[in-house]
Image (cartoon, rainbow, N blue to C red; front, top):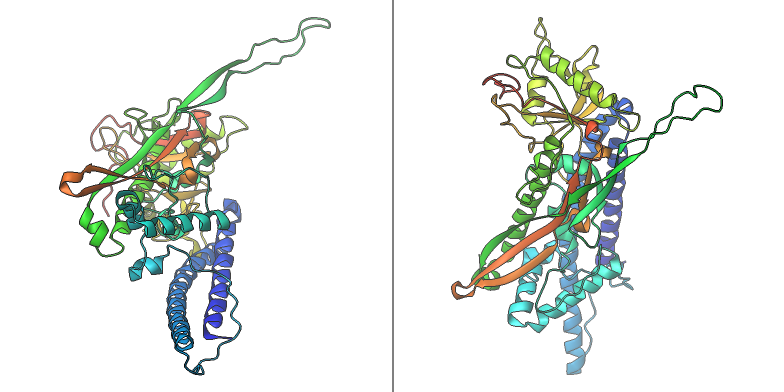
Length: 486
């Protein structure tokens, strides 16, 4: 077996180990809260640490394989030159076996981008603006790879006039899409659905008055008759995106990877904004209507002083009660808090200066909350779904820095409990903003505009009673869930 075959075999084995650990981590995080023991939580934490190390090993192996492939390519070229010149073939010092290609190198990859060999964005620009035949061929080859390997979520026509349908190379998606800026813990927790192919509104039938039954007063008398009433819940499709002006020189002659950084930042901004709108979108100016602004959700009564551990515990218990009492179709399954509120909660002490929220490993007894992931954040690494950091009122706690912190007169942060299956988020292309367009709007300045956008729609209006919020309605400055001091 050649050195290259050995390296490729090691890479396959390593990727198998990565897949196994990722699957195990997802399995643990999908367990009900009452089954999340301290051992399982520790195992999940260990799996995340191992994945970081394994990914680093994967990058090193990929780099070694590229170097080995370059060596073999040079040797093949030398042999061809000797044959063409009619000279005797020089025996190879290396062991060369019958190599079997198990995975052909992709047209666009992280390593190629790092070495400056190919850039997806530079090729897209050159193909459109300069008619570069080589760039067009590489883009076409990339499209075939996507089709063969099943990465494309949908097929769209691509012409030289518009690149709105270009599929971003998978290595870029893997690097940048899952967790960005403050991440999208809430957006990744709710019920995610594919965006319909057409239309700028989604109509969801919603019952407002149900049928009724009652005891029959006497034999042969009429049974209860109450007409059902249905109404359409109209959910608008919103466009979320951003743009960046880039000089022509940076794309044509800049350091390879600069365009990737631009895309990465736009994609991070997209994900953070989707998460923010799911939580607190205004429903105006093209925004989605977020949970906290949806009419009919439970709002806890206002604090009459600054929050304490006791008043916070009481009001959050009331929120759980309100959601749990809404009906058999609704069951609260999570808390979402800003990091400052969760770590304020973990800082609370009893009269003997003992923590009320204790680490899981301590073997909690009569604890107000369980801190199962000390120092964690619900969108660490590429966590999808989001990773809980603890347990409160028996429900998993997720922290999300996109939760508002300047609401009302307080100003206060808000805490949300919900049945996450009753919130619906539709996103085009599985939530990956892959529609790109290069516009020469400032051609006289040699400026190119990079645009990233995606279509999304969200509603919590199907069952508003499935959501409860605490905080944000204090009528007096300094009252309620104000910024804590540590």
